[in-house]
Length: 230
Image 1 (tube, rainbow, N blue to C red):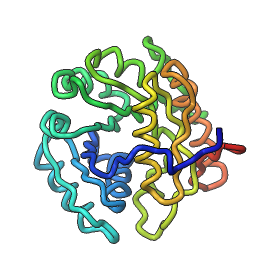
Image 2: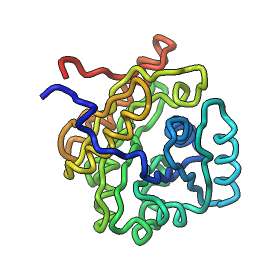
Image 3: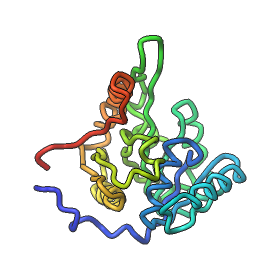
Image 4: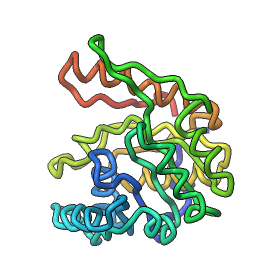
């Protein structure tokens, strides 16, 4: 089946919260979605920090809808879909604290468990299999997917970049959630969301980020992925 953006669900009315929205990846995603007209909430452990970040994003060129900020639990409870974009070191504690606010909600995890040493980046072992599977285990009342793992934060944040030349790999048990994530991707010019299998496949998607970082360092680039023949 060829990729058909017209078959994607209408996600324009969804409110998206980004936990870790004060970090580079979270801020970049917030900017791109707000620039597309999506309702976006920024979450942080410190509400004031989230509000400051939201105000900064709202002032960037092309933003058509103001971004709002608040404490993690508050924005998670207010949103229809929440993106987890925190550092791996704080992943378990952050997700655990959001079990009740995220109950019955859609959750997208874009965290990459990576380590760094003198030889460069490398994937870390995760007992549950992947960051996304850890999130699913910690959020039994939520529906969880892995996505946005390979999107370059500098490109997301650069107002001069009009189009994102990349595909987002989506791993999910729930096809509806996979479609919703693909719909969000399609709101960002140049971006496609491609279903890449069940959540058990998230490990290699997350680990592949180490290869991308190595490519970027070697070639001074902001590499992404394109899936051919789809």
